[in-house]
Image 1: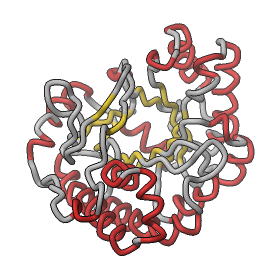
Image 2: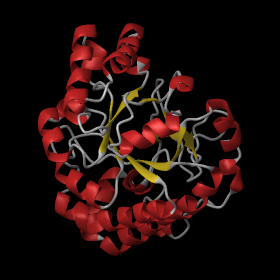
Image 3: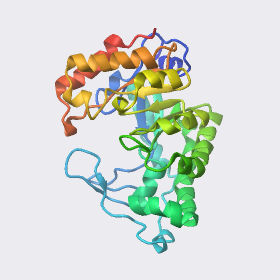
Length: 318
């Protein structure tokens, strides 16, 4: 069985045997899934310029944040330079990457997407306010951002990708950033249009979302998310998550970033992975392990290896 076949079986609940593992930023040659960026967010000598025009400010090894909003007033929107989605150089590295990683399952990564890009352009606070007080302008901004992504999606299949990866955070530690009702009204139809197109091309949808998003998991399943990457399993009731949604969507889970993978030991890391396998991976599939090296926020080398080994040793479907 190839890596790609194993991942497809996990997504389809078709018993691949072992739980596939996604290595995000290290040891990618070991990864069953490989992400390849198709949006240019790290351009220039300092890799601090996005093709959207904003610059990153970072004081450490983390991604950082945009230095300033590009749409300070809505007059700026009228002169906003929209990137060319049909710039073929965005795919110039794809062939070499796929040769390097062989029979893996390939995700075309939008890096950061949708609502997140809207907040980078308009500003986080202004974006939330304008969803209520200037909906017409927010419709225009969302149409530009989501439309840009749709035009990229239309080109992806021809390069041999198996799926498309979205990165759009919607949760705080205990609730959503906006109300679930507003999310369903404004954003859900836009995601559905994108996901329907991806499925039309025979590809899968990977959706990363930090924070507590339990309110909209049924909606994400309804509109076609195939793989849901929740990066903080510790803020969910994993047993209940499995009862409610197990077998309906394939979860992609790490050992929680903010807690166990940083401050836990081998015992705690292995216990967390066992819980994921027992409650999310008990449907002849439905679970993909996720490993990311997080030295920048305090992950030790020992704990990185403990996360890897836990998924490798415990990752067996029941």
